[in-house]
Length: 176
Image (cartoon, rainbow, N blue to C red; front, side, top):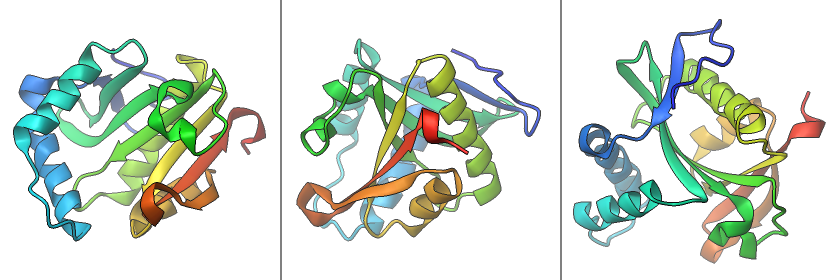
């Protein structure tokens, strides 16, 4: 699933996550984030891989990578139908809502991530026909909060998931 939607800003593309080639890098990104959240539990490669394998066969979710020049990984994004995602227990999900989970590299290039996020937003609103995008963000993740705010998302709820997450929302029809 390559996308060339509005690539005039940067030569970015979106493609489905390739577990064989992308997962080792993604695991390092996730491990870095997981450790930074002061979570003392083990971070298990096999169980995480298994959860991504389940996503591969899902009819309501997909995992994608955003690439620069098709060689430099920018970010990973899980896109799920809102009414099928566990987050729907925290807000009234509608059929055209989509939940995004963003996974950034340990030291992200903010400008590159902003462009990648714009590509994902365009992809969801045009290809997926989303009307609303919802992103749960770890409460201490100032980078994602800032990136989402700069991209037009607003914080609609705080203290979700055992007071550890905030919910950021972008409505297609109220975008600037």
